[in-house]
Length: 559
Image (cartoon, rainbow, N blue to C red; front, top):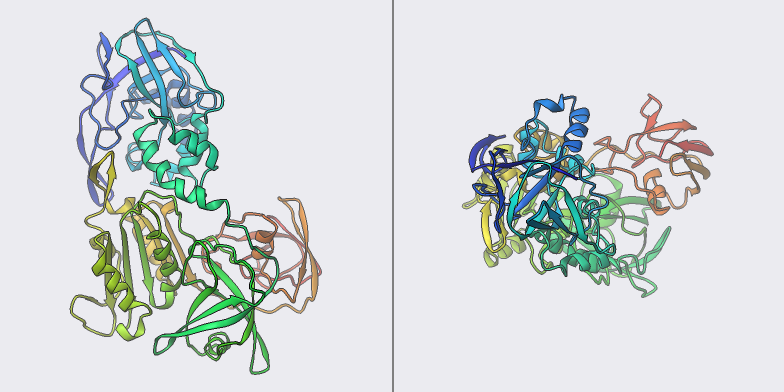
């Protein structure tokens, strides 16, 4: 590892999407003599990141040139925002806390992993979603801290003089930072116990610590198939909206659902067996019951649920679903609900404010009038009590003081997020609206249209999640089937009595399947059928596992 160049830069205002953003990303090589001070490189400015030195390699330049179809020689040193350009850096070998000499005078320590932001995507002409690919690449660079300042020269070698193999590598930390699931608790605690950890890494990983601590007991009490529950409470939330709470008939422990997940319910109504999936509308770290909130409509499912009375028995599947809240995110939370789409978002809001140091939260909630909304009085009280919660109500058929009239639009969403910010090292920094974590739930094309519009205006597609109400679930005439998940090399028996979709069958076996809406609308889970047919075939050799049941006794799916 040899030093090739030293770069620095000032602060610049640049246009990114719909916003003007201040950045210190634009750096250029500096003339010799080169010096490293206790505060980094002389003349270098940082807009938000508190880390002293960012290092990158020419090996990584070549890698990204190949990945992005660009001749790497066109990029001058400093183009990726680095202060020190080396010939090579091995992020899987570099450990947090490693100490290096650089030349004859300077001593550096590994402080953390690069946490890519929207400015990097902008600099490379990539969409915001590129940030995830960059972080996962093992070619993202490293943050150094300064132990001893001094002069450096071209060709100076980076020599390791202290190394703790028990510390996570820079590549490990990159994974911890970018994944939605909480990192393993032991290495996370080891990182946070390191006093000289990158300030940026500490901010992001501290947000994940509580989620990692809580994750250890999330599976306790979990079951497979159906489990009997008793209706223990019924609440009329609005003229057409009712909440029903279910307690386990066996009195046993319940697993904690991830905020945003749903359960499948099975019960008898007017001589028919009803099976429906409903989002959980409340969250608890130690649940004693599950609550669903449903609008009464023409369908047999909602009619049947509204007919349930205290003491009635239903069967529930264990909570499932990937439309969930990242409990370790440092980003401000934005929830956008239309009508009964509030149900999973209410659980997310409960969970968000149960965190010890929750970022600010925003709820944009649209409906016909106040009487058509669930929880609106509770939400208004919450907004009045908390400075870190902003509530925007939009009514399409009523004009109410303090609320907007009309429908949810991208412009109204952006306007509601005009004061977005984050606290780094005790200092509040303004953020553009598209740096928030956005969750959308509602009917029809609202979710897809709104996400597309926000992404077109600069939002990161990876941080705009949605769930919408979509296709009808068709019944299968097959009683029992063998389902082979080809990629995962697992064969599982499917039983009509359980009424699991192929997605739920895979999840029960621990197989992760990308999905968003779980209602056959977004096509995220679309998978090839290698053998057999399902109830959700699309006519091109693929099916939608989230709503599909086997239509053949022998089925092979490319999952």
